Amino acid sequence: MLDVEGPQNFHTHTARYDELLAPVTSKDNDPNFYRAPATYLNLDERFRASKRTYERQYAQLYFSRLMLLKEVMRTRVQQLWPGIPVCSILEVQESREVAVIGTIYKNMNLKPSILDEYSKDRGLKAALGASNFCSDNDSVVLEDEGARMVLSTPSALAAAGTGVSTSASAVSNEPLNVQELVTGAVVAVRGIHEAGGDFMVSAICFPGVAPNPHPLPGPALVSQQASVVAADAAPGDKYIAFASGLCLGGSKVDMLKTQLAFDFLTGNLGSPVEQQLSAQIVRLVIAGGCIGQLEALAGGGVGGSASGNAYNRQAQGAALQPVRDLDLLLAEVSAGLPVDLMPGTEDPANVALPQQPMHRCLLPAAGMHSSFVRATNPHEFEADGVRFLGCSGQNIDDMAKYCTIRDRLDLMERSLMCRHMAPTAPDTLTCYPFHDKDPFILETSPHVYFVGNQPEFATRLVCATAAGSSSSSAAAGQMVRLVSVPSFARTGTIVLVNLRTLACHPVRFDGSLGL
Image 1: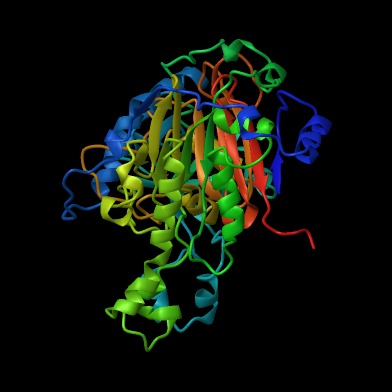
Image 2: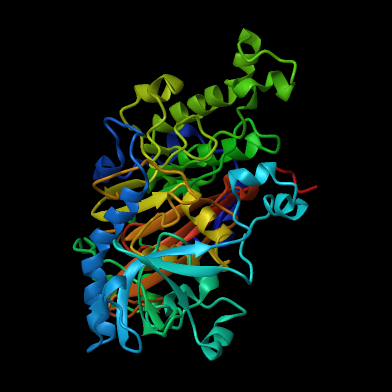
């Protein structure tokens, strides 16, 4: 079953199903559809590693991040708090209101540690399996290039900051809320250092959404209302399709549902109305999560048996079957549609971010097509002048574990406000120890910011004002489309993004008979 949500461009629902019930016609009378062309530019160069060494410490990465964002924060402080002097931690004087720029470190009692595996405290062991590690005893420390200081809030502000989390868009000049912060974010705090005590924070600000020097090639969407941006699509519109979490080889994967989706993308499914829509899809982006399990290859044997030999030919053949299935599916769709493949958490690629492209020897059939692109994770590209940037989901999933913000779009918006794709790396999210740069910093904003392998589909249009704060309304300023791409194995959903209007809607597939 195919369920297309969003604008219906050509016929009404009645006409669609009447066509499906009509008698079979001759192939000579069938309409011919041609794939719409689109320009493409791969921008993954900053995420690719020519040579990697792991001899350096991660402290240099935090230092580089702070130095690269410090001037941005100075400008933000001057805009939000005019007249407030900016100083380093060592220069803070008692009983004088100042602004300090630094990196957040969050002390969390429930944060997992390798030492907890040897602890006899059952409470700590139980917490390791939790999905969120926040507690009421968490505290925040601000660190710059010279020193550290503990951040606190007056009791009245602290009481106001507890409870239900607020939207991530309302954090440009707000009181300190410890539960909504994560380690690694570069911020500016305003307050007074008490005698022999902590730094009492009255307000906090983030770098704000980065500007985008690349205007959209179509109409000026920033001057239009939200209803116009989300208007019905035109017949000549082009789409980028997003999918994630195929989980091939997993215990709950539905191959019929997967095949239906790929048949739709290649134009082999549905009435002429659906085939016309599939012809307007100019590229498919698979945001990680393609492989469901590779336990046998890791040493568990066939079916995860402990007695299995990982070096046995039969065990290796069974373990690599999901990779072969993926290669066949990608070869099928790449023959008629350009495909970008990003690695994910369980995929056969390096674990540390940025993940490098999956090796060509794993996908020999798909690699023979020039339309197949082995991308990095994160992945950045440009299609018909529209810039896309996204990740396979590790960054947002990790942020959700260490703060009380539950909505995935709010977490994505917070990431934009921090001008950093993965603020929790390298503290709780593994990454390469860069020493002279931080490739996850958002020097410019994309037009579309997507994250794969999320619990459900969601989207939001974020508008950044001139001051750098963000708003979900389509006012004058920088517009970014946030797209939460759900796991296909769980939801059977792919997402289409209109290149002209940035409108976004899901397409759902169901392989069951409805019994």
